[in-house]
Amino acid sequence: MAKNKVLVVDDMASVRRFIKFGLEKNHPNLEIHEAANGKEAQTMLEAEKYDLILCDWEMPLMSGIELLTWARNHPKLKEIPFIMVTAKNEKEHVIKALQAGVNSYVIKPFTIEGLIQKMAEVNRKFDRRQYERFDLCGEVVLQFRDLVSRGNLLDLSIGGFLCNIHRKSPVPMIFERLLCDIKLDNNHKVSGLEGFVVRIQAAEAFIDSEYIKVAVKLMDLEDKKARELKDLLSSVSQM
Figure 1: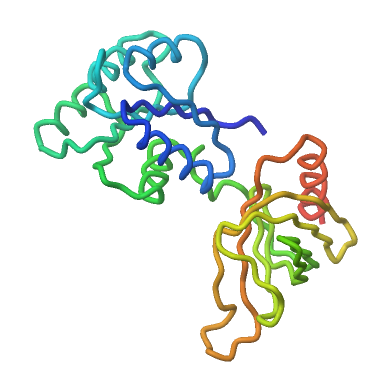
Figure 2: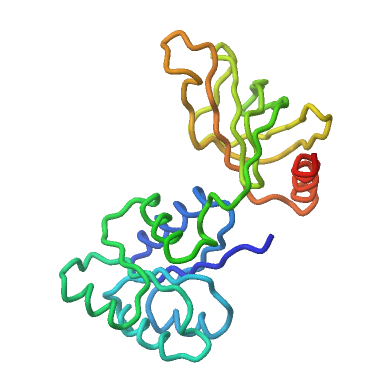
């Protein structure tokens, strides 16, 4: 599956890193590129195709509003979704951006979840829910550090999975990287998937709940592993 390309334009390297890290960790199908100003972004936009622009307003050489105006007047770029990500929250700035053709407007400071929601609003291809998730039964083996936990698979998609493990089993930490083996009840299996933990919670809202839910986001897969996972999901969708 081809990844959606996002161009992040901001003169602050820390902001670019925050957006890049946050999007890559929370969305399974993005390729993030960076530009430090509008001029650099122009060169990149003319060199390859992008699916979305996330752009600051105030930058040296060329501002965000200037880049937006240029893009909207460019025959090949005028349809690219453009989200202004800026600290400028005055009404006149919002109106100016809307008149120039901006698709959405995000005020700094912001959360990655809020940004992803805005991205999904301007184009459904950025909606993480489009990755079909299957409710499945099977076994999961999680390997992290020198520990191993076995659990029950609850659901699975091309981007990640949810499982239950016993509270007395070793529990990985949030954001901890791990290797995952999955075997479905139909005996289809895939092993050696790399991922990291994005959520840990009690399986039930009781203090004596015996199980813990662990949500894992899968990292970029090698071609062979990606095919194995797609074949496994295909075996389910055809049932």
